Length: 351
Ligand code: SAM
Ligand code: SF4
Image (cartoon, rainbow, N blue to C red; front, side, top):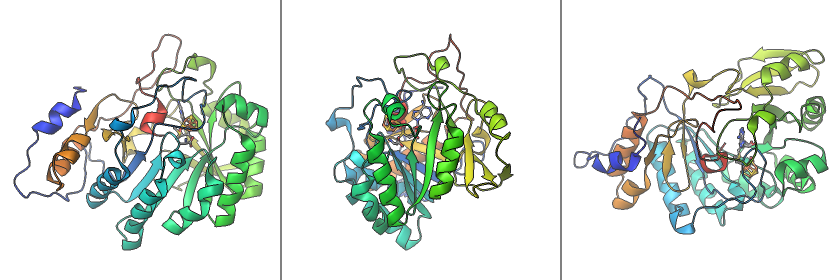
């Protein structure tokens, strides 16, 4: 498939005045209703599976302003997006991020959006938890891979578990519903899932385990990190009563309920069980690049049509054209001989 998206987008000329609110339906009949937006590629952590230690970040001039991001998000909402998740990099390290979140929250008030949420490493939650609730955010995902402070430092390179715990306490106090995300890694947390299930139960958090995905060069071999969740689940079922439940959050996780804690345990298994057939998502980066699939290189440049005109006609046409190219799915593999499925890191496209 042609990866040169900008070429395609500038050639698209809508009929005059043809503002287009038509819902976004892809070639496989999937209705795109979920937008994930990476608001920055920067982060205050350097997780081993996500980033190399010395990352080169985007120059500021390439990054969309918060006003431009809001205009893009609003166009997607007008075209049928009902759920919007902010991610990154670390969304809460972007300067003045609350102005964007407050403005997007207005779409919740009008009923145009069902849910505004974010995925965060939790380090900035002591500062922002109350503001998030006031903006209309009700649920957040917080990434915590281990409860051991030393291991946490190893996994995140720069992270401080104590700060994240303070962030989680602030989130609870503010009334945010919290789901913990943990990437399953052979040498890091393979023996910790029982403790995490217990800890989440005590704190009222749901937990989702994620298989590590082959995205971007991280300076080490992913085979050494990869832990198949099919195996983890079989092992957990020796000690916990897990029942499959139809609970859906719009994301790719399949959920079980843990009888012993009453909380949910989700599995995101892009490698052992492909979830593409029900994919309703597209991902926007902070440069205005739209990825129609997390695991494919093809993308559309929305920054050009956004900046080319003050009305949204060109932008709408570029979005429609991009959705028409949404691929059937990804084909992740992790083995010794395989390069990353795509060259970009998760911090660029957002998790
Ligand atoms: N900084 C925020 C955080 O860590 O929650 C948001 C961005 S982070 C890229 C989003 C999620 O992607 C996190 O839960 C992280 O653990 C996950 N992630 C990052 N790289 C990954 C990879 N290669 N495979 C699977 N999950 C990954
Ligand atoms: Fe930062 Fe999140 Fe990536 Fe960790 S997973 S380096 S916290 S963006």
